[in-house]
Amino acid sequence: MPKLIAGLLCVASLLLSTSATARAYKCQAVGGNITYSQTPCAASSEQKQLADTGRREGSGDAETCRMVGQAAQEVFSEVKAGKDAQAIINSYGGLNGINPRMLNLVNYVGSFRAHGDISRSRVAQLSATKCRGGGFGPITVDDLQFRDPMFAQQASIASQRQQVAKQYQQLALPALISVDFQQIPLPEALRAIASKAGVSFDIDPSVTGQVSLRMDNVPWPQVVGRLAIEHKLLMGQGPKGVMISAMPGR
Image (cartoon, rainbow, N blue to C red; front, side, top):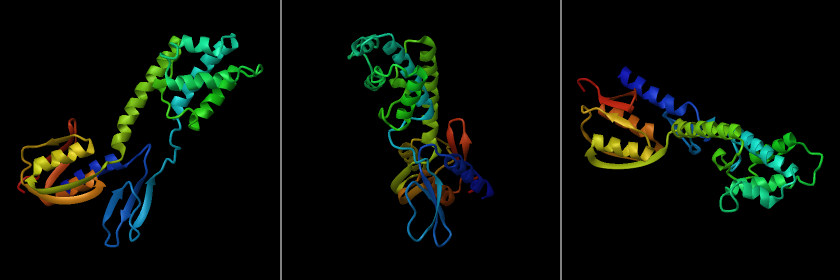
């Protein structure tokens, strides 16, 4: 049993320790039972907020907004060179080739044409600030277009980092799922949970038995933990996902 508990705590702590974009609550019922949820706890429960970024919907992240500032500088260089809006848009592929978010940025930077004393760095700063406030909508690095090879390479690296971060964020807080199993094989139930939660389970052939269980809108580790206790399963993190096997001599 200590191994079982340790395995459950290992997986739960891995998935509940951080969250870059979501809010989580730790709920303790009157009887002492503790659960984790993405929704506020019941009125009868003690609630502790675990994470809350509070970032305004549509606002850009720091790296994206930094790249928006660089793109703004590149556009403003053409504005200062005397190119009109149509010529600048054509340099980005015309109306059929320019990304709509990039078009918004070009129009915004073009509005500084009449400010003869404004600097490129100031335009970059204002554009980044607008990005952070959500003024360009849900813009990403992939929406930006660069002609400068150095900026283009930086954007490519930033995009790759964002993709990795997005994948991590999806694992940082467990998905809420609902299950209704009526006398189905345990491995089948675990595969259904993995599919609903978007995670990978490495299920050992020793895992056998029948499952009847209904749980609504709860974090998936809570569902698997319930099965682990009832069916005496061992869990741990492995190269192919969460490893699940039967306790010896169960």
